[in-house]
Image 1 (tube, rainbow, N blue to C red):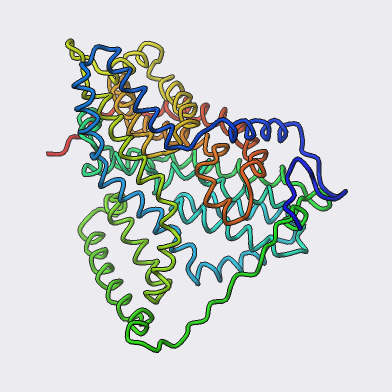
Image 2 (image 1 turned 90 degrees about the horizontal axis):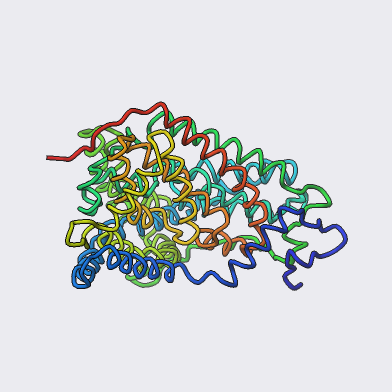
Length: 484
C-alpha cells in the first residue's frame, strides 16, 4: 500500500483536519519549500554579523581575525554536545530499554491514552536527556502503533513524541545554555568576561524553573490528550499506509574467530565500566552533587558507561554508536560557525570601542525594564529560534548581548538563562530540524505532526511569556561569578 498523506486521507474513516491543523499544515508546506538546511542559516548568521560589525565601524581586518579566532573556540563544547546525542541514543536503543518500551506499550486501553502516555514520557525524559527522550518516545510510538486494538492516531502520537524538545528539555539537565554557563571550560572568553560562571543553583535548579517545567508538562499532556482524534476518527499508521514491522530479534552467534570472540566478550565492557564508575564515584564523593552533574564530561561519561553496560557486548555497543553518529552532523559543522559569530559580535570593535554586542545590549536596555527584560528577550529568542535551530549554538550567539543587557539592567543572570531556555524551545515544536531523528524512526513527515505541535506552540507561547514575567519578579540581581 502506498503512503497516504494528510492532504488526501485514506478511507471514509479518515478525519478531516481542523482549521488550526490546516493553518499549521500550510505553514509547514511553506517552510519545507522555502527554508534551506540549518547550515545555511548558520552561515547566514556569520554573514549578517560580519556586515553588522562593519556597519558599527569595525575594520575588515578585525572582523576577519575575530572570525578565525572564534571558529575553533567551541571545539570542546562541540564534542561534548555530540557525545550527549550519542549517549542518549545508545541508552534508548539498548535491549533493556527495548523491553521497557514493549511493556509500556501494553498500558493504554485506547488511542488517546496512548498519546497521553507518549507525551508524558517525552516530557519527563527530556528533563534528563533530550536524546533519550526523542529516541525512546519515537520507539514507543512505533510499538503502540503495532497494537491494532488501540485505534491510535499516529500523527498525534508522533507530535507527542517530540513534545520534550519543544517544552521541557531546555529546563532540564541537558540544557545547552545552562550547561555552557555552568562550565568555565566550555565558555568562550567573550561570554565569560561578561556573565562569568552561572551554576545550576541559579538556573535549572531554582524553584521557579522547576515550577515552570511542571506547568508546561501538565499543559502539554492535557493538550495532547484532548487534541488527539479517537475511535473511527483516528488516522492510524495502517490508514496512513505506514507499515510498522515487528522489531528484528537479534541472535548472538557464537564467534568462530579470535576477533569475533573479542568483539562479543563482555570483559572489555566490564573493565571500562568499572574504571568509569570509579572515576564517577570520586567525582560525586569529592564535589557537590549539583556541581558534579553540571559538568558535561561527567554527564556524558555517565551515559556512555550506562550505554556500554546495557548493550553488554562491544559489537552491539559499537553498532549502536554507528547508528547514532549521523544525528551529530549538524552539531559538528554548525557549532564552529556559531563560535565565529560570538567572536565577531564581541571582539570586532570600532575605533570608539563599540561592538555589535554592545549595540544590541544598549537596544535591549532602552526598550526593557528589569521586569519586562525576560519577556522581551524571550520573544526575540523564540523568533530567532525559527531560523537558528540549535539551543547551544544559538546561546553562544545571543549570550554576549543578553548577559550584557542583564548586567546593565541589574536583572538576574540565572533567570536570563532560563528565560532563553524556555523561549528557545518553542520553535522546536514547528521547526523540522530537531524532529527529523524521531520522524525517521516513525516513518512520518513534518507535515504529519505539525498540526498538533502547532496547537501546542500557540498555547505554550503566552503561558511561557507570562511565567517569565511573573516568576522573574521573584528574583534579585546577583553579580557575575568570576573564578580565581
